[in-house]
Length: 444
Picture 1: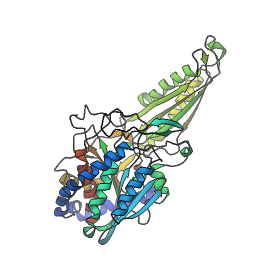
Picture 2 (picture 1 turned 180 degrees about the horizontal axis):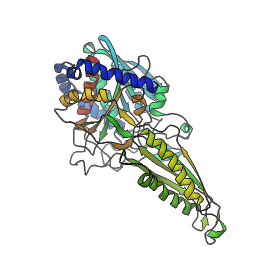
Picture 3 (picture 1 turned 60 degrees about the horizontal axis):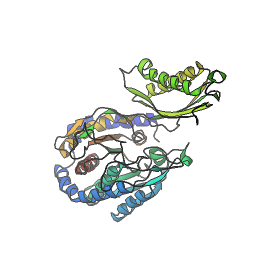
Picture 4 (picture 1 turned 120 degrees about the horizontal axis):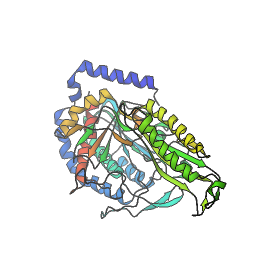
């Protein structure tokens, strides 16, 4: 991965280049080329819908995306791209060389699904089941990754048909495991974007910039949302084991109750955000989403295990919050005569930060390909490992508003809901945005 000083230098050089060339640099792609994208993506829309529905009906958990990866690789090979498979696990990388020499741009889509039982009622709803951390679980595309993959497959097809007009190369990165791990064998190992970067996904050739899009049903339909600087929060998995002393439930004084201690630990963790972090600077969230302890009503157990998440938008605040979480958990447990052991996943996601100069340069082209429906977005407390790519090369992540037909941004089921769905008619908008940003960047 590129060092931070090198990334700062890259950003400074990009900013200097834009300052020298003026606003025209952000509009350097031929307007006729941009105009041609709408009919091209309208033509490929039926294919994108078919791919999306096929992937949706056959979802695969993180690091298990073999069928999806095979579908992607076969498509890219048919388009005449140079294709690498098995990159960082089940990742696929396709390289499209344009008709003229130039820079390199990367476009990324994530392929994995979630351990969620689908309740959408769609005719192509998932009935799939896979092993999730050793236990069989229903599987669903509840975060739009089926749409992301289908859109990027569409972009690859359209740009492959325009290769003679392209100055430079486009690298298509189809990434596994954005949602984390689903196999016990992967615990303690990098997966997803980091695994792909470590495996050389950004090498030979190295991109000069990277772009991606995420579907959000709770935004206005067809809107492309952008933001300079932090867009998606960092994501740290917190694991806490509270240890006490097992005893009879009728005689709690003969032991140490880790369940009561755990309740106080959870309460104490909320004070980290509410009372200890300066959330006027940046927002933060600490949530416990899993707690397990005991196996009988009249036995106080010896241990309780819990897991949760920390989300921040500033790396300094992130480091401070981690220290405070450890202190809060240990102190709350100790006050009850118990102990708490706190650990963080070593491969937590960094804040996803959009390069300021790159973002500014892309606003005009996004406005054009969305007919003015490109707006500045608020920050999202969700986390994204696109940050691994954006920390290595200048990156820009945008969001696509896509409430299902008959729903509004308020009434649409959110990402990760068992009722999640999105409007397939918005896919050409997201695909056009990716293609336009790539073409515009390469044309300068």
